[in-house]
Length: 179
Image (cartoon, rainbow, N blue to C red; front, side):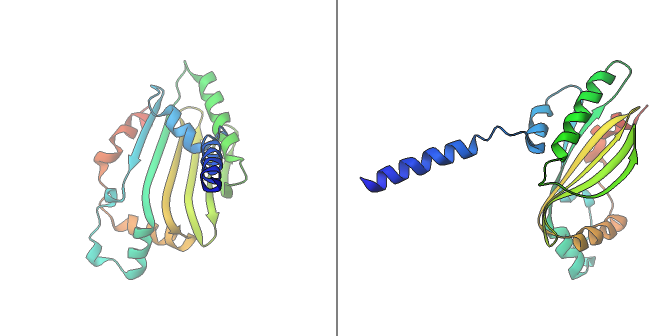
């Protein structure tokens, strides 16, 4: 009897915890994936198209810490500036959550970018790059992984320079960059 009561209470607690209605960047991505004003893209590590046999152990470790990238972009135009401002404000508000630790911010006013992360210095779960430009729109890039750290990210950048990026995976973003 005590076991079933304990199990029932635990199950109810889990249901309440999992039904967290607090806004999050992940929920924002899910809510806007099918929205016609947004371009959503999931990018796998295969986009890098690198010869893994030519990578150093440090580069292999950095590549293995990277799981995927989620990209969500809003294309601004003359007709949707109000919506652009509202959506940009939502993203900025989400990134003010204390779980997002800002590493860097550049620009101000109508143009700018920021880089934030979730986790600790030695165990980063997610990097978030948010860039916006009033004329073009904005993009949020979530780099997800396991046991990432700043060194891995810098090493991954060196791997990027040597990679033959599969542009086919990035094709949907080309319409955002056209003006």
